[in-house]
Image: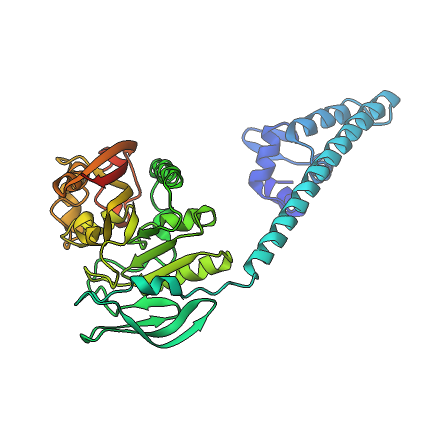
Length: 410
């Protein structure tokens, strides 16, 4: 029979038959390029399929077929040799079954663990009552009054923030929403956290090193009873990744231009059932409803990158009014060499950007210009990233540098 006929009756492809011929598992009669398959090859194919079902490798099949071809498979020595092969395979399969069963049980345990976590009852969070004394009118500087408040668990879930000068903001779902919205077309809320996945391995390594440096320094500082603030979390949210290990006896202020980003992270943090005081503020203005000079530690985890890409003012210019004289800024930022093509391409993708956006040295120098002493460390260099988000301007082969820094007022 022809190759197509054998393939059809055995339920395999012609390529499979050719592969078995190439490996010597089938030995058809050849006349030129033509192969002729007989009942012997049909029987061999049936036996090959049985061996495949028993999980024998090609090399093992070759050894067994050699035994078969050099005997009638009735000689005691031949049968013993085949039995030895079968017993060894049985032992190997038993080990594989044990390994697979252990893997199966581990997967089952992991599923049960995360099913419990997924179905865990969230601990609702709102505006902590202790945060109310830090909510001030951004227009006249007076402390804001709370009206029509719904309070539970020492938090305001719903309500209004008002000032005698006419300023008004809402507390909705435990989030302070000023109503100030970003109306440009160059940014959007990263609700699927795509920015974390589309950066490249080199950047992820630097990201983790930067995160470790910020976290280690944060734990060295006395944060008990202090106010810690993080902004621009639509880019990267440092506290979220270490939220289970931070100081509980302090107030955290988290801000972003998108209320939907704050709502998403708030719901995720609620699932962790943590006993933390967190004030979420949604605002895209340059003046939040926060008391001036109240923040002890300002966290900038690539928030300054977001700042320079979408606004003209520097990170320090934007947030220094909220800082105490003794405040510490802990940060991580990334950028390029000043004369690189990558820097010159930034306005092409982000027309709203500052003239020094993603020029790493100039971004760091804004602290010196603002009267702050800054210590910075080069953490990692990426020569290639995925050309998405704020990396769209990155020219492959040019240095994208990640820095850790700490700044204090001189």
